[in-house]
Image (cartoon, rainbow, N blue to C red):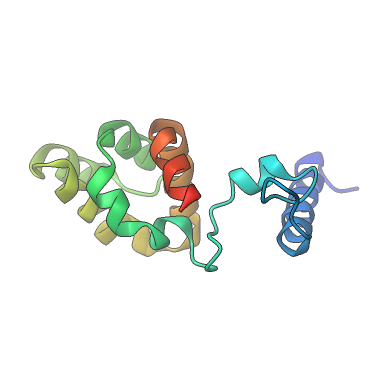
Amino acid sequence: MRPMISVKYHNYARIAAISANAPTGAMGAAPGQAAVASTSSACQSGKHFVDEHKLQLIERVKNINPILLGLQDKNVIQAEVYEDISYHTPGSQNKMRKIYDLALKSGTDAKDVFFKLLQEHESYLVKDLQKK
């Protein structure tokens, strides 16, 4: 018997796959799938959200410290990288560039963590960029 977490993950993955191929309703999401569509890290172009909106995120993200802490807590960055970005890098745009250069080169998992932190700490910005 599989653990419950595995079943939930597989169901979520199946729902996400179905919603990606399902016809869209009047609001642009598959009927009954609005929650999955709004939290997806993939854009219509097929690129990851943080790749698609890199320039806008570098320019517009201002709440960097809690995002850095979250990246450290999730082991996306180490303490040395956190300290370098947090204490030795001036300006939010430079900090965001370093996050992209140092943390997000790790792959999709790192990008997914970053995306979730953006949703948590910069929710209005993420919603605005998802509309575009």
